[in-house]
Length: 186
Image (tube, rainbow, N blue to C red; front, side):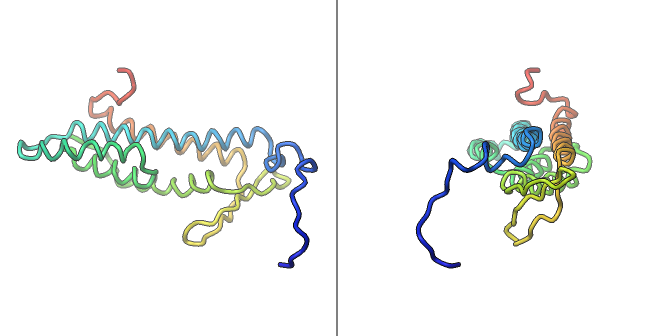
């Protein structure tokens, strides 16, 4: 890098809505909706953790310790990120004697795998789209892996649908036990 005279970005010369000007408003809307669906999934996992930990049976000698641990556990359910929430959900399901969630390990794995995509969507810089409307997200993860797959609005919609299906599966895991899902108003 060559050192030159100090300078500033000429903000008046930048296109309107820079740096998002090369993508359509529909692209940005779908990206936002997809990211918001991951937020919904995180909320649902927190509520499911509440349901499973709050309905677990305890022996008399476990109750006092369980009550002490419940507050911090619920706080983490509000603040943890997707992969950690998936693990906490799995633990809560497995520790609840009345839980009967088919393929819970596969559900947890699918949620954790989706967290990698969520991180790309939330943290990438989006390269201008090609002639087909596909854009390569510029993102390098902690393993120094770069994204190599371009995405368009339809790809984002498929990702959103998958995240929503994961949330529905978590909700179903609670309601299939005969419990109302926390916050559902039922």
